[in-house]
Image (cartoon, rainbow, N blue to C red; front, side):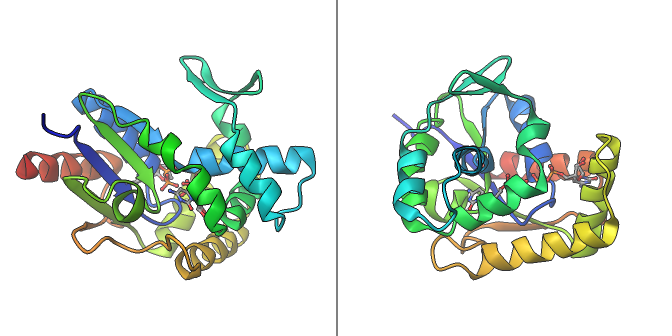
Length: 220
Ligand code: CDP
Ligand code: CDP
């Protein structure tokens, strides 16, 4: 039997991975995995329990035992139902990128991520979907956009959600997280050798989704 196909979408923060992955999965009827949520959930739990963000043993246990279920109503951890906004705060994002640099935390989340690979196919977004988690994915997209347009997108997204934000702060936080994600020793953010680079700086969401679907049609 042929392996279940995977479309891996990696890239820096606010490049549009989540929105694009969701729309592509919907268009193809594929399962969708936002792998960043798993790092965010582990970070959220650590902040909640007061686990120091450099205690790799405790953090690895948290990641390995993450009692998470993905239900229609949202993500459920320990009976707590999350709405997306709770996990998407910058504080949780920075904590997620801090713990994501610990190799044993990444290993603890490996099997869980791979369990999302189900017929008819999977669209997975993150930092290492094409390089580490699904190295045999038939389509790998490395999504970029200039730091300025990414900061503006994130800023507009926050404001539209009623979250107060300052563009200069959003830009500084984005650069900090980019640096941490590209410079770490394990699963650093970089395109897989066989990834298609897609720069969405001057593309709308719809145009970017179309570009990914066109790459998919070419690859099958
Ligand atoms: O998942 P990631 O952090 O890479 O990005 P996202 O949350 O999907 O996108 C960040 C924001 O940029 C969202 O509000 C998107 O609607 C917006 N966006 C855009 O305006 N144009 C694009 N080509 C892609 C995303
Ligand atoms: O949406 P955004 O790109 O801002 O963040 P995210 O995808 O939710 O990821 C939050 C953090 O988790 C990132 O800054 C990464 O450090 C980490 N992460 C990772 O290391 N590997 C992944 N596959 C996904 C996320």
